[in-house]
Amino acid sequence: MNKTFRIQNADRSHFSYAEEICNEMEESAKARGTGIAKRSPEYLRLKMNEGKAVIAFASDGKWAGFCYIESWGHDQYVANSGLIVSPAYRKSGLAKQIKKKIFQLSRKKYPDSKIFGLTTGLAVMKINSDLGYEPVTYSELTQDEAFWDGCRSCVNYDILVSKERKNCLCTAMLYDPKDHYTPEETKKDFTKKARIYERLLRLKQFILLKKRKRNSHIS
Image (cartoon, rainbow, N blue to C red; front, side, top):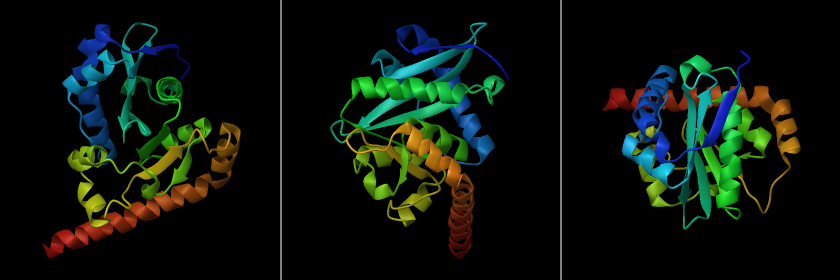
């Protein structure tokens, strides 16, 4: 699919899209069978108003994608959250364009902050690697309670709690502005290890979900 998109910083003029974006986030999570921390339209409007979000439109003016910034631990950590692409524009390369745009905005607003993300998808891992992110353990993420509280609405929250916040179905990735490889290096490394990462993701999901089912039968 070869389409042209307009990706820009979101603001008050985009408030009317907040509800549609929230609904699509929830439907997408259901379709994947994975969980995300739910956000309200009011919360997305707050991010737009603060200049901490980007929004994408197709050439015909239709909403195509969205992502926003959250900061934690007194701005020591930043997360690019809520990445969503409208179903009509998936597999078009738009997700990568949005991630690049929100990453650039994060670096501009928080030049000294570590940027991290949690994902259950190999495709997002690849996009992050292209930007210079590296896979890390959960211990290298923010310990801000407000961040972890945001995971409560995720369907996998019980797994996160049972693992004492040291593991879950998501893979953690981090960009440290003071200590990181170049995007070329992380991209090359991911390409070499892609099959290994895919197997590890499947194995993690199998083990953790199997344990959840076993515990549900016991209870």
